Length: 347
Ligand code: TXA
Ligand code: MG
Image 1 (cartoon, rainbow, N blue to C red):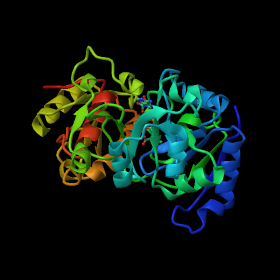
Image 2: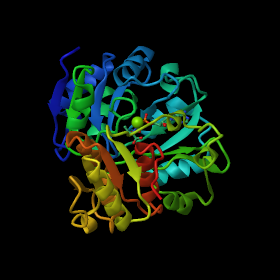
Image 3: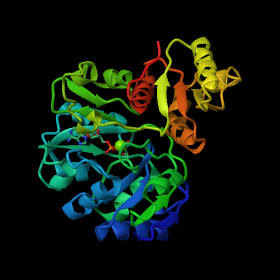
């Protein structure tokens, strides 16, 4: 156990790179320590990407399988060129269009980042975050920062400092607390070493946005064919799981009300994941949580991981969740919900 340092930072403040809190955190990274920090998607757990020893600390703190590579966070294109070779015109177009922002590009590695970061692959995942605190931290550290989401492996990703501390307090050197993150789901991971490019994980940038920028986009065949191993190693693991058993209910509110009745008759404490529009429609449920507004899917993404953790606090036995249209950010929402439910669906 270590005493985890807690640095509070206002993301809107001017001159963040010189901020004393950011400098203390950057000093930690430079010295091979691991530090959690906010990005526009979720909180990351960062280490100097050139240090294998520092990266190892991340796997240990998270309990992460060592075959699951980390995303390298950069603040400049020069840092990308230092890490990657063969940056295709399409990769360049994606970077120009969506960076800084919630898009991760898988590119050929130059071998500069540690094997512990890439899990020994010949490729490396890179992302330029737009969150001012993340940018300031990378620039102040003067190195690119390898960072997975800052949760214990298998848990919902953290969108608030309290989520990170719940999972990792005493296991990490420090946390830069910049308040709630924005997007709420992780970045879209795109493999740029294939033609056409392949979406390995849906996220903050939608398939529609990618198609508009570069034309043709493929989806990882493992997304639809369970016999195939996903190309993003992380996609094969159980993820985002709340403590209670969770089910998705695509058929709607009437069916959810029947399920609530059944569970109540068996003496179980029931949680419902719904939205503002429907939150008054489940009077018999024990815990009804509105996860944003159905009419604005961005707001659902923003609240999603907090909502999953909220049900843990409320100690429900079972969670039934409404489902969402799989367009735009809805794809990322349904991907996370489906994993949180381990694929359980009630017809
Ligand atoms: O928004 C995000 O992406 C957040 C913030 C902190 O940046 N990070 C994040 O990292 O979600 P993580 O480690 O939770 O997810 C990274 C995903 C995993 O599924 C991993 O297997 C995949 O990216 N990945 C990393 N390097 C890869 C590579 N070289 N080839 C294919 N997939 C890779
Ligand atoms: Mg993660």
